[in-house]
Image (tube, rainbow over all chains, first blue to last red; front, top):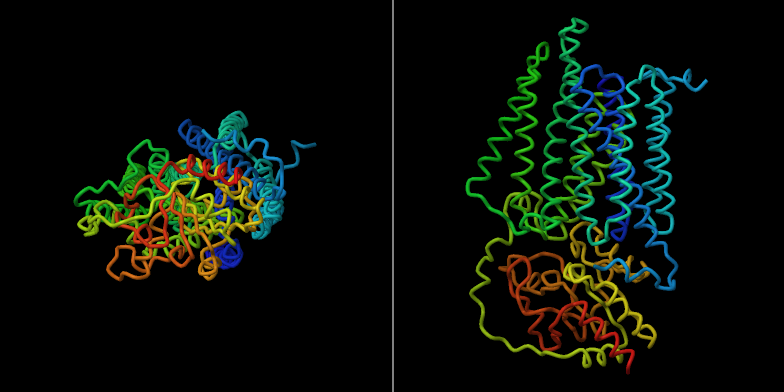
Length: 104
Length: 476
């Protein structure tokens, strides 16, 4: 890919991002943030490439930490988003079972 | 044979799969525009991520499987435990931490890219690191390191590990500016010497950026955290996009840009909600010294009521609007206030919630807290939606909120919060304010609402007061 192909992708993605995300209502901004956090975990691919082709000890360490960091983003981000969105999609009148349990 | 099913790095098959992956991200976020479809959207985005990861693992020549497995296992374990254990009040910390590790990963990848390039130069494979790789790598390193350290400080502040009040250090602007100039100069030096870049200088850049991240976030107070977290979110996104440029990976470029756009939009919305510029929030250390407001401490009469009177006012109202603030989250009163709303609805009193954009510690935080307490999202009204309804509202209940209801923002052009959009509680027929004391809010200014003739103050802990009101209403 040439630099200008990449820049084209970047600029178009920025416009798409602005269009799509400005339609997300305020109510869902926290799940949006944790979801974009998870998507950001895609940098883990960089870690995979580093470790996958590495042949010196420092790169092993750097890359493995990067993989771990990225995986925290991906797994933690998508899971916590799912948990939050589950609260929003609850039926209006559920029996309040575990409601009080979380407060401490 | 699975072992044979390898993809050529940068080849058509791999790129096609990355395109599928980022399309699923965009589609997933698009499904996030409504609460009923958002959960499914999140699954779609997660599926896109799975495709991206598997594609990369299938790239030709990828090795060191043991290390990859360790990284994946550690990351997955931490991610699962954190996401299951975190309380909804702690979401801002969690997001700050995720921002941090994301930025950290980018900075580390940038470092190894530089090492890789230097190694190839030493081996004689290439004469120099091409600038269209080197410049994105430098950008990724700086922004990644700033957001790693900045996010960690934000986390520590939100978790009360370090003081949340603004920590102002004299001459700090100068130090920050010097650090920034130094970082840019070092980057330029590396770019100019791209035939023989110094790794030592690169590490110095990482360290200087780390210092900058610390110094920029340390002076920022707790109530400005929504802006800081959104901004760091935008930063990590852009750093991922830069890493995508360096690695020539479309999925990274698009995903990073998507996150960057999201963070930017949220940053601007939060700043608008406070009527302050992003620069002012980052560099002014607001709220440390109350400007002038301290002098006006003359005794003004307030109407104080108890839980029973408040319950009667509410029970016989035609409509009630609840205005929650961060104090509600601190007191863990979201379930108690829901009990009040339930008791009122049982009596046929319609209840809505007015949510100020900066009511919590991150964008949309209050909505999540109330959703956790089973408040239906239809009742969560945005500021623009509820303000026209305020004059027709019988009783507005302010719980744990202060500055976001202060009419001085509209009426007093000299007020430090002048021009900040507020929930117009003063327009309601009556207001009940549940608060520990008359102490001023974060902005350090008196709230005229408390002294208005149609305002009643109910002094006490938000959770206790709300439970008392709920049981009084049930007893009527």
